[in-house]
Image (tube, rainbow, N blue to C red; front, side, top):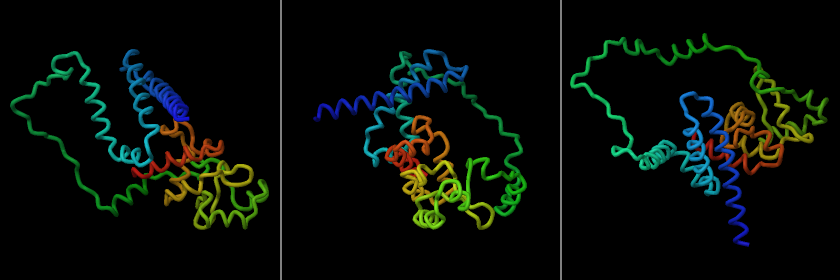
Length: 240
């Protein structure tokens, strides 16, 4: 049995590595500064890193998320040790003996917090909730179109098992995409509990996520992959 678990683990690591490598390669190919050899090598390195991380305990992955800067520096240092150049492939810079003082205007006047909020308010553009959240429905529409009783919806909302977005000053609407078979997808309540802001929770659920191979978390929840999505959410929001 132990051998089977090891083989399954290696197969999972290989699948993750292949997915990550393919995604990284696609992104780098769009950058004209990358040569084909560099693209392939960078993609393989990214895939190897992903394969090494996938089976780590959640606590270890959280710690890595908190120390991403150090992790990136160590990977870069490891790669640089393979350089054939005597100086490690570093570029020598000519540093002038005298540095000319900057003649720029600086940052200018620093605004107060109140002034900053006023200026942001002038720049803000009003958007309909449907523009960023997708199709939404109120309690009446959900009962009429999906047979979800208002009392049931209220119970879900009070229990934190459904995403409810405030529209206007008092009315709540519900992203339709979160429902499957007349109830919220499994795992939504757990993710909502990780985030105090319902809008942030729904944005995270509804957008493609690089931690999940570019897939949308809400789609995975509706395909019964709640454990994978919750794991990614805990790692992501623990680093905030």
